[in-house]
Image (cartoon, rainbow, N blue to C red; front, side):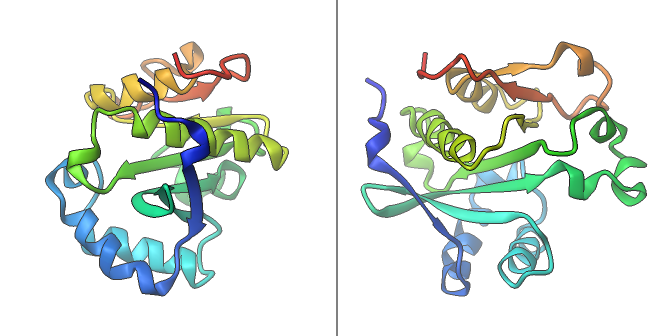
Length: 180
């Protein structure tokens, strides 16, 4: 049975959350798909402290933190530093928002939480006026790809095979307003 979206909330990450995020980033199910935990926590610190425009949030279930989600702005990354390694960024509208997420506690995987959190976060982004929303999982992360499909994301055919193997660009379909 899907998780009721009213149970899902988001809270901006604060410095007090760093120990929790550090623990999560050390979890094997997160380490497999994210970078070095210390480096990743450094990126989050940059966001919280205003050196990066990416917006980091904790995912809340019934008010308790259960995961991490962030919104990053494609237009801010359509520069030479980023596009030399990720040229596909130039093919998206500059107003596109990218989303990344992870469920912190492994016991909460495969219960529909990722799909529900993503659907709720996309609804929030749409209310803020964002029209093009993408996510870029590793195609080998089949659990994530399936969760994103349930939340209404579809692979972008125009970018298939053009992102360097380790990235599947998926765009949210605004007609997919229910978790399937």
